[in-house]
Structures are given as C-alpha cells and as structure tokens.
Length: 125
Image (tube, rainbow, N blue to C red; front, side, top):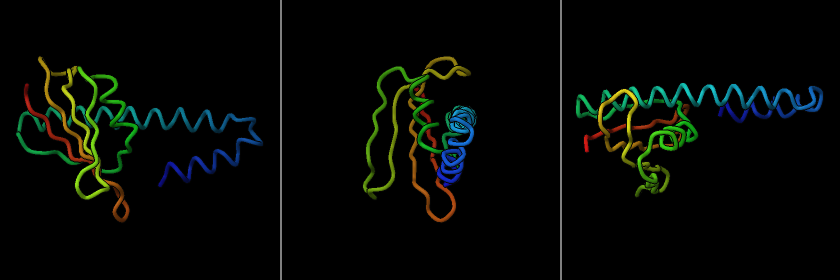
C-alpha cells in the first residue's frame, strides 16, 4: 500500500518536476527491493540450518522475483496455492553465502489487514 501512495505522489509531482520524482521513486523502490532480497537470503540460511520456516513481513513480490532472477539455477516454478490468493515460488538456488546449492521455497501471502507475509523454507539438495 505504501508503494501505491508514494507512486501516486511522485506521479502527481512529476508534472512540476519534469519526471524527476518518478526517477527518484524507482531508485528508492529498487533500494528497498534489494534490502528485502538480502533479508530473504539471510533467512533462507537460517531456515536451512534450523529446518524450520522463517517469516518476513512487508515484502513485495518484486523482491522475491529479484532473488530468484539473481541466484536461481533453473527457472523458478511459480504456482497459485489452493486458497487462491497465496503464491509459491520454488527453485534451486546458489546462495552466495553458502557452499553448494539449496531448494528455496518462498510463499507469498497477500495483505491481510496491515501486512503481507512471506514464508521462507530452504532444504539442501
């Protein structure tokens, strides 16, 4: 929701700033997505070590896709789950901080109330 609000503001300001506010918006959004991707990668190691799922809130789909685009060894399998709203992303991933590769599964559940949640599980190959 924050992205929609800030995008609307930057779109309204783009007329008076000759589009600079849109560029600033996308630079800031890209930075947030990179930070969320780093958090997903660090929690994937935690999940791999403990064997339990890790939870992360307020992460958008762009950050999940960024992780799989950057580190996936094969195309990411994306499927809609039985509830009709959650999306599962699964692929083998070469983690930069882990020797070898792992199967990374990220389940994105949309906003319920004020936050969306992703569930991260990782298993060794």
